[in-house]
Amino acid sequence: MQPAFSDIIDIGQQCYERFIDGSNAPEIAELDIELAGCSNLSGNYTVGRVSPPNHTLFYSLSGQGHFRTPFGSFTISSGQLIALPAYQSFEVTIASEAWDIIWLNLSDTPQWDALPKHRPEIMENVNLSGVHHAMELLYLEADAENREAAIHIIGRHLHQLINRDVTHSTDRHATRLTSLFAAVDNQLQYQWDVSQLSKKAHYSAPHLHRLCLKYYQRSPMQQVIHLRMQRARNLLLNTQWPISYIAHYVGYANVFTFSKRFKKSVGKPPREFREAEVKEKT
Figure 1 (tube, one colour):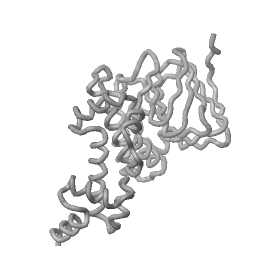
Figure 2 (cartoon, helix red, strand yellow):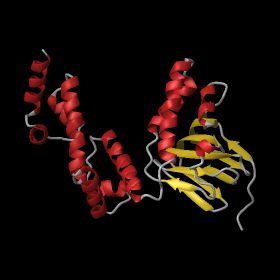
Figure 3 (cartoon, helix red, strand yellow):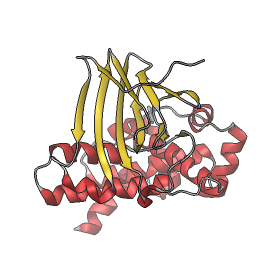
Figure 4 (cartoon, one colour):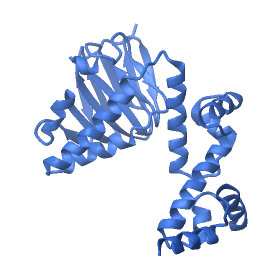
């Protein structure tokens, strides 16, 4: 028999939290957010609630957290979100040396009817970096107009995430692929291969290949190359960086290999492409 739940707050001195509430960001009322925060946690951290009246979302930016609920125990890692229904008890602790998170208490109102009602739900491959940055801005920003812009970003991302049709496999696959290649786009210098992509997306390699052909008309590695070439084009047009530097930045240790790939994708080698674009602008 698992221990009974209790209202508990045990937060040690190595934990740092930025709280967002009606006093520093009154705009959160628009989204029926009662309280939210950005937390950098280590050492002692245990928070327990008995039948809380609001839904609680925890999103792991890095590290791991462990949750005990009436429906069992769950651990979430980087890129995962757990939605805990209103009026259901829970207890959360750190499950790694450090754990960086954002969390939100959402009122039990029609705006958030799509949230789970009966048991916790873990969402995989979620990218809430935009929400994280917007929340940090809310905490710091004194200007109401800038806070309103941040609220718009938070609301759009949360509604897209929560109101998705979870029973529709096409939407689920599209969301997972979008998250996968957003992560790739953030680390184009990394030496991605099919095995790593499959592991990150939680798909088998053949299944990932089929999905990429369906959604992008490209194989997984062709999609990686596509993102690298997009970034290379932008850097060639908008910076003075040497071509060898750009090649390394987008994942090519050999500038000759990069130039050959760029020419195949764009039709011109990098130097010629940059010079042609400069002439056209002048």
